[in-house]
Length: 445
Image 1 (cartoon, rainbow, N blue to C red):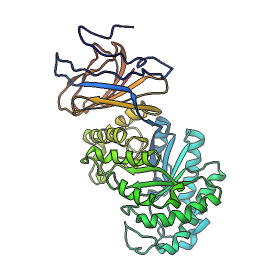
Image 2: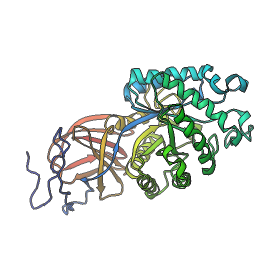
Image 3: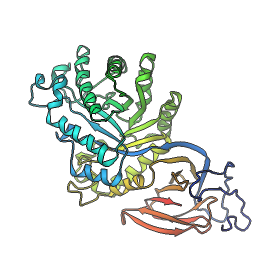
Image 4: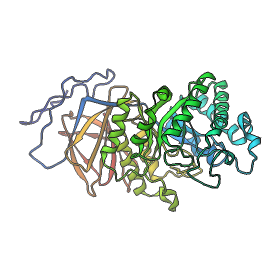
């Protein structure tokens, strides 16, 4: 083992940071110090300050709802490369140009889009190892809503709740016959009505009907708690729903979408973590993204700015909301991260790989930076190895000192506008590393 303490600088060794296998860490928290010999930013990892464990870096596969076919080449490629264990799929409950009586109730199972969804989910489980499915609905038939002319904010008539449940239950039972128990259900972004609108009170009434029915049918499916359109309204909407004790047993992870959140203070994400802790629920970000209208700009996903903004919002979701599961929007040809033929990878693809390659099944611990322009995220993987992500927001390179780490060799992956994926071995010398301007860096020890 190399000597860790240099000329007059005192710090406690973070025992076990670079040891493989055991996952046992020093019980004494590292004592931070300031390097008075330079003004370089200092990053300190605190292994005893445990946060959440990231269970899965997952994605959305919604094409049955948008294209009428649940499968596409991009979806197949992301399943092969990223190997998600947790995914969210969309089921269409409205079929344009088809009379409602043709697909109401169990007849929905005969619709081609639903048939492809059944096949896709079976393939996801059997071939690609998906273990957890979340099912979401965007639209329901015009005949069941108060305002059929509306595109968004469509409100289901309460007297038709049972008919909506009929279709959902029919699909869930069908999937169970194929050996797939759908874990969670939601109406997408129902707080904002994108596309079906529910107040908290209406949500409660729907769950009171659907929850017992699912249970009676032998289903394990319960509801995402929230699945809100953005970060800020999550706590208010979810708190109002949980106010009724009769439905708490049917509430799963506290879930939110990270749209419209770039300019929010970190405290808004922390409020989500606090509410989840109060109710003993995990946090899931069921649509991980930053710009919900980016698709209106040509080639939005082909530039570095879009990717770098995604890196920043992802960091905040994991660090401050303590999300255990993330679901990128989307891993199909919809807000795509690669071309439809899968041959061209866009910048955001490489930022996504920083997550999929390194952050599955990682126990997150606290990490602090002395400079607000350096965003640190730290954790230990299943082998007990330290993983450290550093996002440099500065428009210039910077040397960062990693507090109390040994002079050792680490794998370092860097993504910048100039070079989207640079994978190399580095040697830490007195804990110092150089971060390129506006870069995303992952170090694996």
